[in-house]
Amino acid sequence: MNPQTPPESAAPAETRTAVLETTRGVGRRGWLIAAAVLAAGAGAALGWRRYSLADPEPDVDVWQHSFPTPDGQTLALADLKGRPLLVNFWATWCPPCIEELPLLSQAYTQKQKDGWQILGIAIDQPDPVRRFLERSPVSFPVVLADLSAVNLTKALGNTAGGLPFTVVYDANGRLRHRKLGQLKPEDLQAWLK
Image (cartoon, rainbow, N blue to C red; front, side):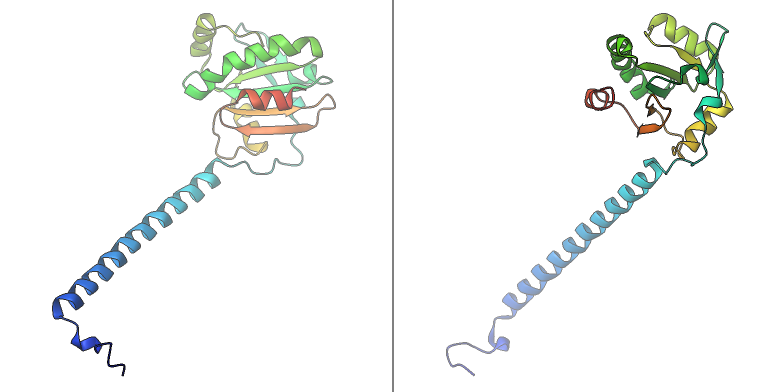
């Protein structure tokens, strides 16, 4: 034993108690922080799983679908084949959907001359869609969803059924891009070249 260092038992009892209390405090705080980090990580993982896109079904044929328009006509997606197409699934009760509609409308106005098509598929009741479009018209065509549109979003990998959901097809009818969530100008700049 070194004569310069007193044995551990020679330290005053108050000091030993203070060290133990400090160590316990850090330990408790450490466990609480670790538990919080684990809980946040688990929540993020569940959220990612719920709101991430699955692979689209290999045999999904978007071009076989037809949907009614708000004015009572029918639009067949097969009529849109042959040119690039962006399809946006939205609803009047979905705030991010409503926020991105002016961006899509502007993109359609700018890119239509380059052959681009944009179609909005409203996952909503006909009357709210008609009222919304009267108040806030868009430059691109909108159709009303039925059960086949909801099933189409799931076949395209949106298993959670979240909105807004956007898909982009090239002129050959191949699926090129998908996004679950609100579009940003950067998305459209990258996709609508």
